[in-house]
Length: 135
Image: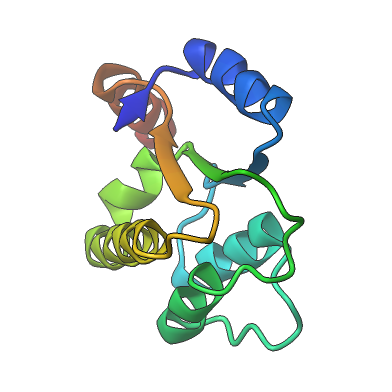
């Protein structure tokens, strides 16, 4: 699901007001897997055991024991289109890991669910941004 940035702030505020744990993963300027892993670790507040690889990210997203108890968890991924355009294979892997984490938490009846929102400017704005960088 993709949202425009303007509606994102009220959605995050509503989730926080409802007592959800809200995490923000901003991918602005991320163009490498190493940078992606650093941003993921920061956004999740990942523990020291986080190994900065795909398996460690999948493990962290299906653990989340370090997060405060909450009725639900929301991970808002913003400014992702540049990364998706430049690192399509890695982006697909990240999407799969996120989808698997959502499915995992959905299958845990006594645990808070995880919702992931992909938010950012529409394709036209992202394309315009790429043109400005190239020009």
